[in-house]
Length: 496
Image: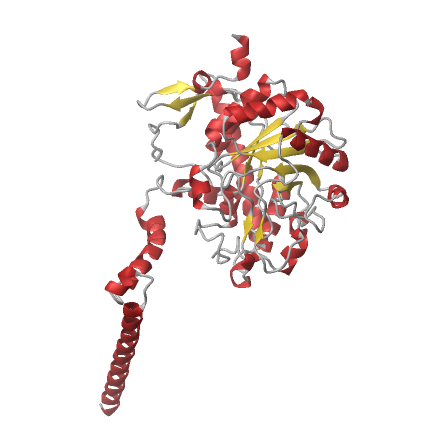
């Protein structure tokens, strides 16, 4: 009895002390809030006003897990992410009862099923496609679905390592992004597309200019199959890459050729490319030095500018790029100004058919390959792009989800909770390369498999044989029209 009374007395004292501590903390916060001048809510409502910031911060979490419907959330909804999660886990991607997709939303593509599709044993896997037939070392690319540009620096060491090993396992290529070629890109032995950004990281001299010697050195690595000149990317057209100072460690600084601990901000365009003639000069220069296919990555702004580009290509057919990567305004990035993410750049849904028509109109159908990028993460997205005219599709965020990305939207803060976009060892330890690379490979294979399933359903034996006539686009009134009537291909118009 005495022991119980003593325990109660001790607990009572502890409780009173805690009340005192909370009261003291509350008083200090009250004084702090009342005297500060930056936040009107905290000044007018001391202590209580702090909950507004707390709830705003937690709102992002609660919306994602409790309130948003399967098809509501942006930039990627739960249905998209869960499809990728099932594909990565290697479990069945069949679903029951019915679709949760609202197919009456204007712009929704609906594939046209064939009344008598090929039998299962008549379907075929997609054949490799040659890129750069005039290069000394052309590339016979095995897969139509590949990994888009993500640099080491924006991504962590284990993330890039897992992507490299997963790409090798699945037989797809890996684009380095503009941050140069790291040992981790090469780790898995996959095919590499080396991206040359506006700062020319990895192939620059001390003054920041393109180094022919460094370029040749990179090209002699057998895994490096192609080079891509990045003119623009969808999330920030007209703005260079941004790598916050917190991410620029000694290793990244050495790979990029920059100063450790300083923010890495690329020029908003190539300093030595101010017009299409200079662009073609650069393409020819890189192809001559490396002997490998050279392409460009850009964002469509208008048909006028695109037509001017192809007019210049037609005047110098020997120097045209071997491929064009079209990134949509809905593309992603690690860090970019909100106005550029939200408001600049044509959607890939509009741009891709336009570029495809212009390429064919100017006679480059068999010479220039089209690669589509920009928020294409599920089989339906990839199938749409191939039917609209793309030869290849690349995805970055789809593969980030396969790495375990939870869409925390902290890519630019070096605090990514999954270890994908941070260089903090505390968070990186959660990303186990031996597990993630297998998930990456499963995701790539499942996308390819299900795109082939869609192709089979519309009546062709492999995906690149899909055409715009195999899709219908939902209109404002809820009805749908064939895509080849809305956006006819150049070849179809030419035959009329």
